[in-house]
Length: 328
Image (cartoon, rainbow, N blue to C red; front, side, top):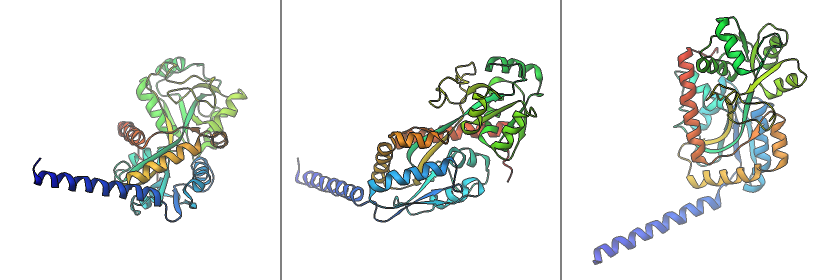
């Protein structure tokens, strides 16, 4: 080896040691102040419950207070834009649901943030599936029977949703596209009025969340056809999935995940991911989330990034095909 090459090798090794030392130092010193966990919803409900569970479990591990900051409005856009423009130091995080990071941005053509490029994926913490339920007067006890009936009804079967562009609405649009049927969408302002319309027979079907739908199913006031996750839900393992019931590829889930501003150092992202995965894998957190119809689920930052990208592309196609515009 020449003297010149030897100098290059020594300099390269020194640079590598310097970068390694810098990475270790960053991981060891973080966090240096309280962390703000931005929630794109008002206090109460599933997203807020997840955020407060994260704050309770993660603060002792990191040695800093985690402040849950509820910033509702504009379908989550206010909170998302705030985090996208925050310093890239891991002290400002967003707990986003699919409505904030996937379907919400897909519904807005002139959005002020990119749900994929403007965030660093940190940790997946939970998922919420939905239950496809029908009024007992409808002569369909299975997904296959419902599809057969819908193909002959020519749009006369109405399905309720919790609002224009909501997961229950988009679930209905995906169902129609995959099953090649036509139904009529009837939007309501929230889960309670949508469920009431179904119970009263004003509408005939609904993709409802576990909190509002499961009690009615177990009281036999409505009929269940299937759950919207690919695998059966641990909250009601006796209910088959729509996928296994004959409509292959059908999946609608709400994903709850922590993201940081794009460019946040990888060592900070990886530490947060490890701490959240370890601290959440305990019975009391599972019970706390289950009360809101949420199942604990984790993923690496890379896995979460790929999941969000796939989901955004999927729902963007559904929204564009159906011509859906969110009612502001």
